Amino acid sequence: MTVSDEQLLDAAKEVMKHAYCPYSNFPVGAALLTVDDSIIVGANCENASYGGTICAERNAITTALSKGFRKFRAIAIVLELDEPGSPCGMCRQFLIEFGNCRVLMGSSKNDKVLETPLVDLLPHAFTPAALDAHKEESREDDD
Image 1 (cartoon, one colour):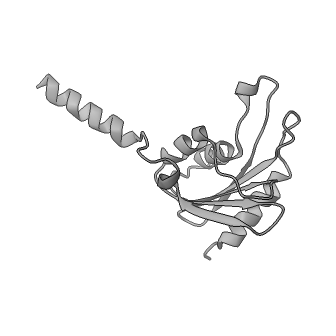
Image 2 (cartoon, helix red, strand yellow):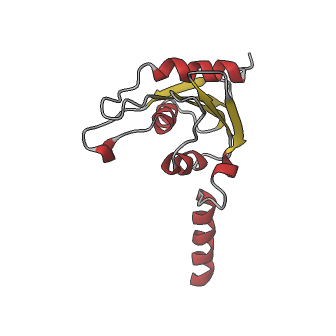
């Protein structure tokens, strides 16, 4: 079965209801689509120590990792705004760690959806490839 964008957005919208956001009252839901068409969801979880807050996107990714998934086709992010919103910088960096994927940004208030490749949201990203290149250069310097 192929998962549609609508199904992915619906999953993000549904999990948004479980967000723990007593400080901002800003619920966010995310749904990751794995390469084998599994959907893994996450909602934001705030903390009184604001730095301890976990965004919905990172929640979904770490849940996927704990289930053994490492490759993703798409992520849908749904916010409770009139206009779709994009992932924060930390989530963009966290996502690119696992490669490029489609990013669907939706609103829980209407049917507006924006779609873009992750690399367009984080041009010139720092990726594992940069570390691999550095390791290779270090080995060459040792020779």
